[in-house]
Picture 1 (cartoon, rainbow, N blue to C red):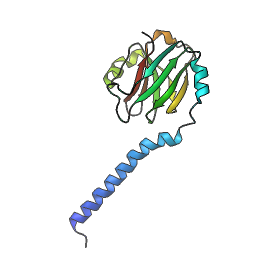
Picture 2 (picture 1 turned 180 degrees about the horizontal axis):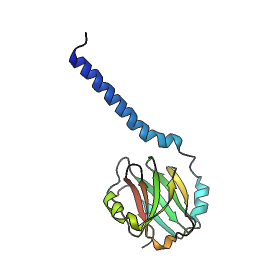
Picture 3 (picture 1 turned 90 degrees about the horizontal axis):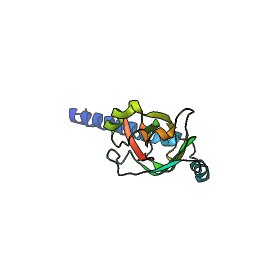
Picture 4 (picture 1 turned 45 degrees about the vertical axis):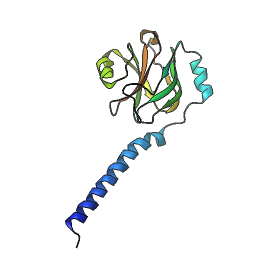
Length: 160
């Protein structure tokens, strides 16, 4: 006969195991389902037409071990590119903002004045097409945001 303490221990171990598996799945699924990253040549070709550049840095206020970006971001009338890396995650969106932000609170405050450019589907290098009608010169910063979890990932100023 199992003692209540043994039952509780097994139950707790099972709950922790399922929770850990779920968390690892959320982290790993975007990596496993991501399309192939654009090649360095593809990114350089698109970046060559860019009007502005900026830098994603890991040391931003709301960036952390699981939410960060690093590399050179190039912003042009037809595309936004990254030569660098992002922490893997689900449902990343690329926004242009009239102000630089580095916190979730600032993102929420300014979201109405931002424009969403598109989805970021790769975590090493990316090319995101700029939709017709978006004037990138009207904005100053580019932001990667996790829409599913409301998490700030990274940002860069590209225009003073």
